[in-house]
Image 1 (cartoon, helix red, strand yellow):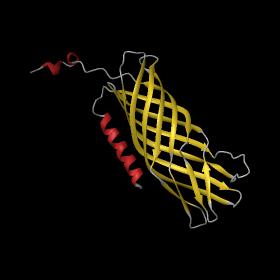
Image 2 (cartoon, one colour):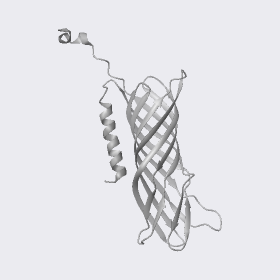
Image 3 (cartoon, helix red, strand yellow):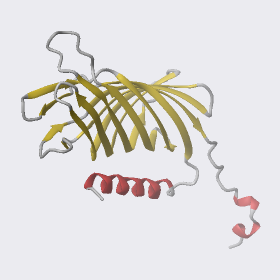
Image 4 (tube, helix red, strand yellow):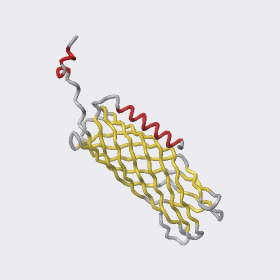
Length: 228
C-alpha cells in the first residue's frame, strides 16, 4: 500500500471513530457534479526527440459524500471523479497529442458553516486524502502511447454557499481547489518517464439529505433510572 493510500485509510478510520462520539449527530448523504479546469497544468513529455507540451481542456466532475453535522461543523468522507480531455490544437505547430486525464479522489473533509442570519449560509473547509491520477495519451507523429496511473497525496480547500430547502434537504454551491503532489509516469516500452502534477479548479453543485437526529433519551421512560 502506498503512503497516500495509507493516509487515506487512516483518515477514514479516524472519521469512523469520530462519528461514534455523539449518537444525536445529524448524519447526511449527498451527490455532487460540476465543472473542472486544469488551467495551471501542462505536461511536458520528453520522449527522446524533444519535449511535447500537453494542455488539458475543461472537463467535469461527479461524486458522492457522506458524514455528519454537529452544530456549525461538518465532518465528511468524499469520493469524486474528474475527466479532462487534451486540448485541441489548430495551428501548424500542432503536436498531434490526443487523449484524456482521469482522476479519482478519496478525501476526509472538515467544513465550518457561518451563521450570519441569512437564508444563504457561507462555509469554508479543508480536506486531505489520496488521489489517483491516470493519463491516457497518444502522440500520433511519433506513435508514442502513454498509459499510466498512480496514487498521490491529495488536498483541497473549500469555499461555498448553502441554502436549506427545508430541515432535511440542502443545496450547496462550492469552489474547490484540489491538488496532489507530483506524479512520475512511465512511458510504455521505453525507459523514459515524465513528471506531472494535478492542480484543479472545481465548481461543484450538490444536494444533501440530512437524516433526522435521534432524540435525547427520556429518563422518565425508564423508571429504573429514577431509583437512587
